[in-house]
Image: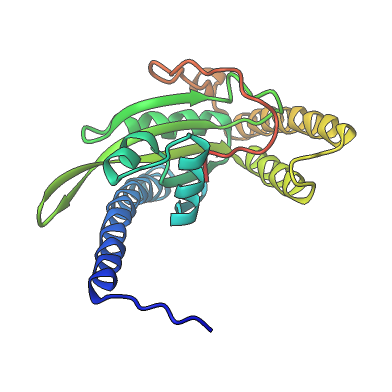
Amino acid sequence: MTTVHVTEDTINQARELRDELQRFLREYEFGMREVETKISILRDEFTHDHAYNPIEHVKSRLKSPDSIVEKLARKGIDEPDFDRIRADITDIAGVRVTCSFVADVYRLFDLLTAQDDVTVRTVKDYIAHPKANGYKSLHAIIEVPVFLSTGALSVPVEVQFRTIAMDFWASLEHKIYYKFSNQVPSHLVDSLSDAADAAAELDSRMERLHREAHGVPQRELAPPPPPAPTPIPDAPSGPRVVGI
């Protein structure tokens, strides 16, 4: 058995790299917490002041170092540093907001992005323009300030807004593609597309029922268009490699 001698300098360099990576990821964790707090405040306000909570649930995640490395490889970045990672990967921190209805999706998006300390970098409206495989969701990359002892940082966070039906469909689609290692039989692909249409119809029907039950005029529930959305390129079918 060969014994490999590791110098103290090598060990110290590895520790420094580990500490730097942890500090780097903490910045994104803090940004994610800021967004979670903003959404939590909106949810509490709706619950107590408006007697209606448009948010069903909220999930968040921070990309693991392995996921970041995999994405760098897909982007063809061979020798990354932390500045390059900051510039090229904008979804290290992610928050997903699942709403009751489509109108709630746009309303929450508007309320969050209208806040003075929130900067919108990109918007991809896959509800108005679904992906080829039927995927629907409203994606936004926003920047929020994080105040540390060393000063203020502007941290990007990906926020996804979708309905319960959209969330259920996306979860099932992901499991199917994972089971078949992305080589899904064509009849299942067609069935997923049909299911996406059925989910959209369910969203529409449930929103009409909600409107009728509460006597809310159609114009109050009609989703306003998001501000200056980023043009969406044609997206291939299959599981998403970006997102939560």
